[in-house]
Length: 266
Image (cartoon, rainbow, N blue to C red):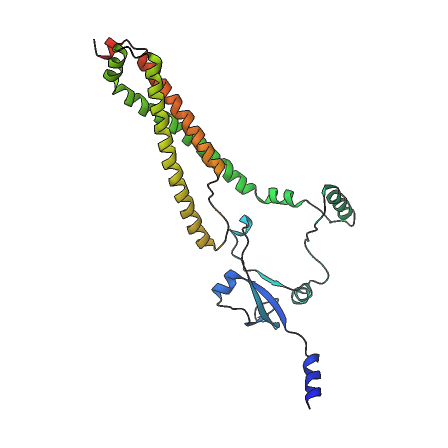
């Protein structure tokens, strides 16, 4: 009796398996090993499948605005459920180099009418037009912010130097040269710019962490929405230092060119 039972078990068809999106697993309370019914239309008869894995969503910006759930199944099973036959809308081909890519594109485009082959980077550029516009918009905001900060820094330095008119006049009357006074004011302005830049980098880093934490939770994606890179920090420090030195230099030159007695109000 044991041998016929073993033969019967061997002849039973294997249970089909699928992998589901982690958002679907979380929203529908589905775990690995659960049985589901997959069909092309709601309420129609379908195939019973077993969930074999839960897929983590990729960091793809094109998926952020879409709320569809994702299910992955074997190709023959997908053809059966969808009733699409031996047809596909699109497929990806990996090539070994640029020459092989060109040859594959020519072969695919000349195979039949309606076949169109494109490089993956060209498709990425076309699908990211919106993000390019947003990037340019952010750059414009950054330029405006830098210009406004430079004007604000210059005004602060002018006011600060004007408050020290008597101190500068006393130094000049004591024999301190104009160059020494200018260097002292420029060094103070550079130090002030570096301190402000350090605070700005800290605020930017904390803000970036908060933005990523909030929007990754909202959209349930590992995509990085805000990023503070060493290149950005270097650019910020360089601009801050240059603007600080220029502001200090402009303010100091305006002050040292005035006669010391005039600075005392005489």
